Structures are given as C-alpha cells and as structure tokens.
Length: 89
Length: 123
Image (cartoon, rainbow over all chains, first blue to last red; front, side):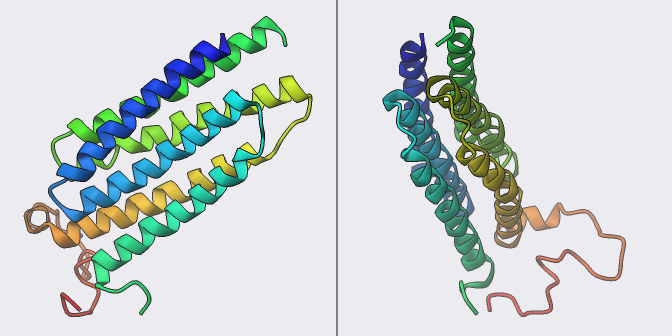
C-alpha cells in the first residue's frame, strides 16, 4: 500500500515541478522567478523525504535539512539583491 | 507493521503530494504576483508537513525509534516561509510601478517601509 502511495506521490510531485518550471520560464518579472525557485526547493525537499521513505533509510534527512537552509538563504539573498541592488552592503 | 499504521502513512503521503500539486498549480495558474505568492505556502506548510509526519510515523513503526530530524525540518520551514514571503512581497512592491499606485495610505507620517526607507531609489 505504501509503495503504491509513493509511486502516485512521486508522479504528483514531478507534475508539480513541471508546473513550477513553467512559471520559472514564463514568469513576467524577476520576483515570479525567485518565487518559482523557492517553490522548487520545497518540492525537492518533498522528493528527498519521499525517497527516504521509499528506500527505508534515514540518511536523506540531513540532505533535506541542508536544502531547507540553503533554499531560505538563497531566497533572501535574491530578494535583497532585487530590493537594494546588492546582497551584502 | 500494523495495517492501520500502513494505511495512515499511505494517506499522509497522498495528502502531502496533493497539497504540493495544488501549490504548484496555484503558482502556474493564478493571474498576478500577489495572488501567486500564496499558492506555494500551501505546499510548504500542509504538503511538507504531511510528508514529514508520514516519514516520522513510518520510521517509528519500522525501526521502533522516534526521530527528531523531521520535526527540525518542519520547524525550520515554518520559521522561514513567512520571512521569505515577506521579502518577496517587498521586492515586488518596489519593482512593480502599477502595484505602488494601488497601495492604500498608511495613515501616519511615514509611508510604506519599502518605498520610504530614506535611501534614494536605485541605490
């Protein structure tokens, strides 16, 4: 039952990533693209956690935690650059 | 592993994937930036939250050991999602001229923090 749920969820997350990549390519303004990148990080974390359940290993959680931290710092750096034209003043 | 726990884990995985898909659909389909901003928040809170609870229940049932890692990821995401959404909204207000004209008056001596920061524009 869990294997079937993982297969369906994997397909749904891949579809979500495709939709996010569409917004990343189309997005009329830079802020739309930053938002799409932020969402891609969230979806990648979901895929990593799903892989952890599928392979039965707890090793992937460090990777997911790192992705969460780096994704947040990336989003803030991009927004800072859009707001001030500089990341570290 | 009990059938009840197995069904619970499968249901939580499906709920998480559903909300991730809803968030991405909102990001792709909603008409303007301020409305698009709130689509992915569903993916962050409900989607990732349900998936992490699923993995917590799964590893607690399979290995019999309660792990705190998933709670760390949830806590970190819940703390950082509002901050990044706020930064994105500020950047959007600064960049979109049409959006600035639609902002209501603040009702105080100081204006909107993004636009009234005391620094010249384009610095």
